[in-house]
Amino acid sequence: MKRVLLKLSGEALAGSKKTGFDEPTVTKVAYQVKQLIDQGIEVGIVIGGGNFWRGRSSENIDRTKADQIGMLATVMNCIYVSEIFRSVGMETQVYTPFACGAFTELFSKDKVLAGFKKGVVSFLAGGTGHPYFSTDTATVLRAIEIEADIILLAKSIDGVYDSDPKSNPDAKKYDKISIQEVIDQKLGVVDMAASILCMENKMPMLVFGLNEENSIVDTVNGKLKGTTVTVE
Image (tube, rainbow, N blue to C red; front, side, top):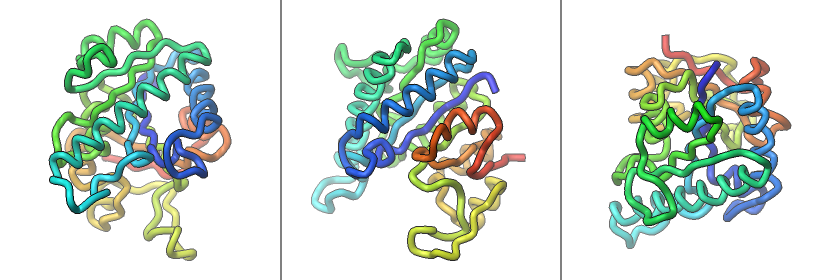
């Protein structure tokens, strides 16, 4: 595993507060990613915006405008998390698919790959830049574009279940499941557009709980306690 795309849930970064940032949580993530960089692994990161804004947060706002607010929420998250990463000794760059003045750089595959060679962690903010596409879809799209070996899906739950473990205490957790089964059973690991993109481009995923101790490093080093989503 040489190059990974790590997707972080905005809600997971908020910790027990459920909104905004929880710095101790983000700092733990930073130290784990630094271990990956020190191992020579190249890391791209996409962060959701759910700690600030959910796509359907208001029924009074036009869908396109609501999605634009969500995109900006991911930019704020990436700028913040990028700075925490820098504070523990990493080089970072935040990219967006639209101009944000001097805050970010425009996304370019060539720039991202050049940064990887120098050990730079690339934050891929702003979703796809278009409404009606989630950060799930942006995650898979960017993973394919930067030729990642795998997507690391760090969530608030510790894997893929046959039903919602929050509402069903008897929910069954999968150790391994194919993306086709995820689609057929509508398990919602990522949304349907992202699932189909994964399947068509053979992009596997490892799904695990962000809040478990050392879960990112363990997952990359073959000690996955979550679920492998296969694409063969």
